[in-house]
Image (tube, rainbow, N blue to C red; front, side, top):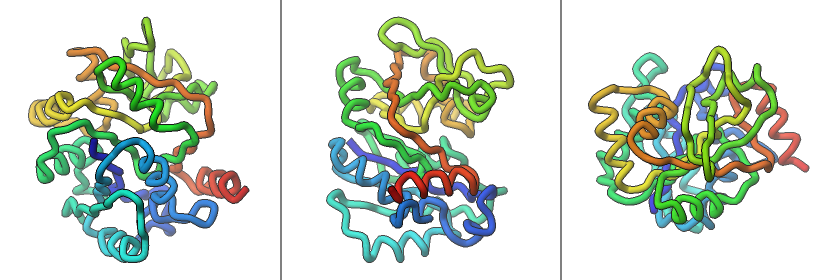
Length: 242
């Protein structure tokens, strides 16, 4: 299995911190966000971690990687974009990586601003047991906040029966946490979906995927931070500083 960390967004809500510096390299608890993520990935069975970023942030990632010594090989990939206006989007970046790296195996995908305390091995175990793609999900118990995320509806054995990306009227507070395992055949489905629809959000691809095959959710209750604002960055820093 390969792992892919999405780090090509321009994090405009965190300006000026991220004007010329990538959000995943901001420190939380004295450590770059991406290092927290890599520490979680390292025990999940991935044999290589790919980090896709943009042309503006690429030099910062290269500088960081020179002094960082992970247990799993890490490769930094430049998607070539230079601004928020010409960004590829999440699905575009995944398609870029799997095409250029010729990925034909299971793929663990995690957003580069996604901090969580659950064990990824549990997500991997669910994917293996069901022989299907799987998504990590959490009940945030806040309908207003759920409007910012992909909202899930589950059926028997946590099969995903509905996925709504940033709904104006969420039907539940169970949300996707931008941590996915795609089976190798679904990696090919993503390429097909991108050719046909050019979706931006990963949630749009999940909606496409569940219309074709079974996808399951691993629901966790451990701490989770989706770092999209200065307030969320501060909250995460306080938690991890402890």
